[in-house]
Image (cartoon, rainbow, N blue to C red; front, top):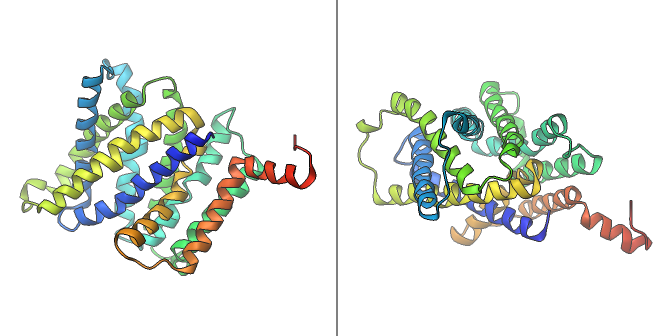
Length: 303
């Protein structure tokens, strides 16, 4: 990954880390599936308008839409539904830890399904260090919850698996404009989520949301979805599925730092330890810091 890729990855983690804050405000007044539908539908509308203004063509036939539908299913509809349902049965912190297994599943899926993103000892060690950092940062005491509410925990793990397959499948969009792919995926996700949300939430029966909830939903759609997926697909095209899904490690870091800076929450020592472990994991996966340290220490470059 280049320096630009790393900067984009950090920006993506901030946008997705902020989604927890926006979603927390929105779900105080709206059901989760309605929030999910509003998030993808509003983002889809924004990107479709942007595509029209910039002259980027959207898929124009069923054959072109099919990959977008599958991507929307794997990257939004299935994991959103599983995570929302899982969080009704397990603590949100444990759900975040289970979600942080996404890079591990991605490494395994990419090793099996691709020829250029192979599993290496350094990459596996880096993923393990990053996952350990997330656990330390969120709170290892939550691991005592493992073994209870197995269905909810399995749902969160299956969501991580779905994200992993989505990341690897999205390689087929390399060479296509990020705006086209992001808009197509979100349009498809909206069509998939709409009947489920309408059937289960019956949103027309809900009281009108406040201005705060509407603003939170708009921010969730514009920043944490529309802009975030433009960045996501750009990193994916440049650096591959395994690297783009390292953002899962950085999201808790961004969420905690935003809570500290914006909400005045306390930054505890375990947060710093967890961030250090994540940093070591990312360095191991990237490889260049370890090669530099080896060269400085020995005077030779590893082959």
